[in-house]
Length: 241
Image (cartoon, rainbow, N blue to C red; front, side, top):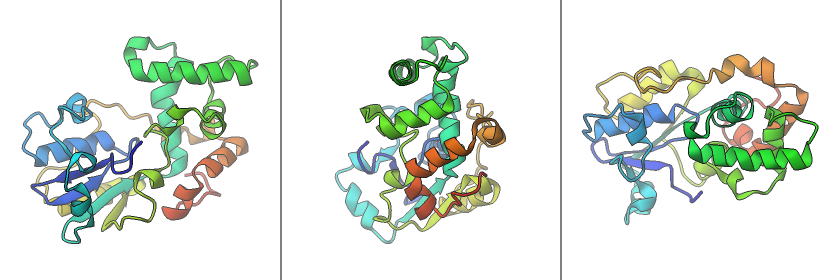
């Protein structure tokens, strides 16, 4: 993915927000659409459509870099523990096809991604009946496939430009009740943070499933893949959330 692809500028709030998939990004995009005056701001489908959402992506703006470097424009984001974020990506984007026999119509793109990962499984792990969590992590770490660069499992630090850009506030989804309000205040937003029900996006409940999917093997895989996230975002790699 190209740098700055996930940086959105809100003209009305004069704020840049960098969203990270699997970190309530649907909710944040809906908030940004509300600030831009869209009456259908809770339409998650539109929120994720880069061409129709009406959102101003820095990467598409001729003066995007100037806006990003402007100290008078606040830069905000929200991050997540790498252990729960990557598990959420697996549960939402891969497991439905790998184990639940979901129809390809559920999400054509991610079904195609799944077929690539499943081909890796058949070659590297024919003993496995389906793409389990560890196999998914191994594919990310070792396959070298271009799809490894998908924004749903690329390290958060890559999306945020590592330490190249200074953020005025970095919220944490683990402290969403408090941090979301801080970000909403920065945005001068007069509505509450939307619920998952409001944006019609059911949660994966990854944080509640940590013990089911993690052994020492998966922990070490995630530690290697997301070592920069643990370091830069100051999450404890040695402890599961």
